[in-house]
Length: 340
Image (cartoon, rainbow, N blue to C red):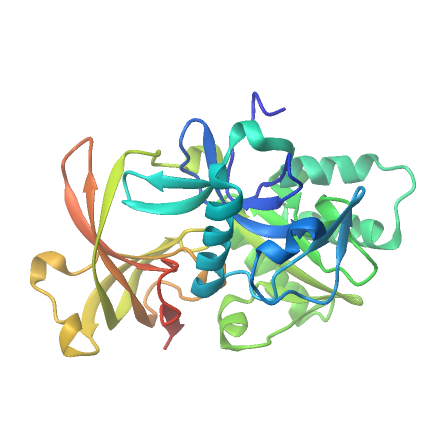
């Protein structure tokens, strides 16, 4: 499987040491995968100085722990430091970003879980438990109502890894921007008829509308690019961080906002402070979120408020230079995108 595997965002894998990580993004060096740590084997828990959830998980014989907060800048730096000290092969200096990042060597990966293949495997299980049955019923409902074929769905999270419990949520993915927009409308219609309901824990949930309830279960859905939607490759761009900026702007194009990284084309840049006043040539064309919770929070024409790192981006093939603002650099907890 590893020989033919093309790592894409949302794939999950288990390493030789028993770490479970999720693939981040679509651009990777030839011999390693950009990833973030999801579960830590109990024997290594003391090496990672972060607050852990009290609950534990099991994957085969492995007992696993998970950080209380996976995506904070502080926790990312703590994970990076722990890997640097104890498992240095998981740390990679990216020459195009000029910084160290968590990145797993392909030769450390033992098993890969691809969401669409996990869904297919789920259909083949002869004696399914209640949650497995409910997950398949849910996906079949969405497929039937939306007209999206089952091949364009996948299952993610603990159900995909067969390490779920009766308390686990249903976590699904849909492949392709067009399918995602179609599914979004279908879920809205099913909420109107009372078949589903939305679950909003905060204003980002309310903006994204990617979390809800099906029968007794919380569900979440996200988008993954199809191969033909991956339009850049590792090493195509060089990124130079310039300064932290705060501003508001209008979303000009939301066609890649549902993916991770989430990409918003923007216009009408309005600085929020004197540091963020920029010459015309440095005004960002894009706002890019590395943090999943800022996917799909604004549509074309919406205004957003942003705090993030202004970067100069150079296309190494064409020498074209443009600017973008990145949210989720792993440096500051202040980085965010808020819908206005």
